[in-house]
Amino acid sequence: MRKPDDYLELLVENADPYIRKLKKGFQSTEKNLSTPLTIKNMGKYLVRNMRNYIFWGKFLLPFITGGSLWIPYYPFNTFNTEAKVFFLFCISVSAVLYWRRETLKIMTVPGNEFFNLGAFEKYRKEEYEAFINLIDDQFFSFKKLKEELKIPNITEKYHTLTESRINEHKTYINGLEQTIDSKNEDIQDLKNQLDMLRDELQKNQQDDSAVKTVMEELEQALKVTQKEKEVYSSIVRNSRRNMQMFVDKDFHSDVLREMNFDYDYSVYQLNRKNEYEYLTSSGLNEHLMEKKIIMEEKSNVVIRAHTYKGKTAFGESTVAKLIPISLKKKIVVQLHLSDEDIEILNNELHELNKTAKIKIESTFNLFWTCLLIQHSVDEIKNRLKGAENDE
Image 1: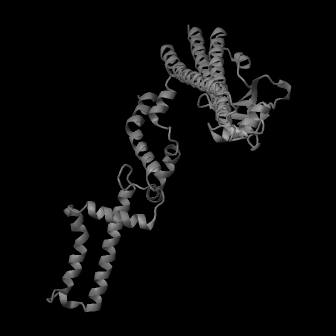
Image 2 (image 1 turned 30 degrees about the vertical axis):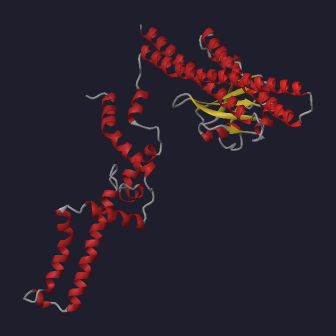
């Protein structure tokens, strides 16, 4: 008797290639079936079958049959001219319909150069309805499903944890450190330019308004660059501090309320009733926090974050983002902004607007990493606990 893994392996080998072809058609071909598209493909189909004798035999046979009516000998000469023309017209229509049918047939074959999702939906409706929810999800594959359903041993899980999660985070932090180094060089360069201009003013001993204007612009650029460096340094500092605290406290869930960020924050988790319930917060009055948020509250930033599925949702004084921890566990992190943050974010022309957005996304990224690591460690602990109980 086959095991569930055997059936999944069959789906990986046989269904995944088919789904990939459907996804390719879903993403890259014209999805709507139209008469101009059909006529265009009929022409392409005719050209492609230029040397296909079987196709031409089937296509021209009716015309040859109709043309035989003009042979001036019995029994071919028994029809009058009107009947011959009508008969030839019917044959021509039948031949064109055959040509169209053959074209539409290959337009419903996934992976074919003529494949069209609209034709697939119309002429293979049951298959379309069976697969549409799978091909609409660009991340789905039976191979990925098999990996997610697979119950790995502790070594495999730990390997996934360290290699996938922690290394990804390290790469991100290394990138920020390189940015900080670049900002240091920019700061030093700006300082050098300012020193040169000051020396020039002292040597000339006169009020040069043009030089002073340039100096003001350089001082403003220096101020902005220093602020950007400060933001990136804060992100790196918070990351290291939070990761170390996670390790020191054995990745316990209570650590969530003790994490260090430059924002106050609240965390909500989706429950079985499809509601978001309050999980924890930091820097806020817990008694004033909404304990449950239902999906009908469309204007709530937490629900909007759920709807946006990974894109940041901006509220009046908060920003929120959905962090999918697993297939069943979904968390929304909500950052509560200061008046200064709100002012910067509301002004697209503000010199720190872009940096403020990077800071927010970096905070969400750190949350995402910490929550995923915590979830993975919890799974390891549960597995170890289950193994001890089995003994």
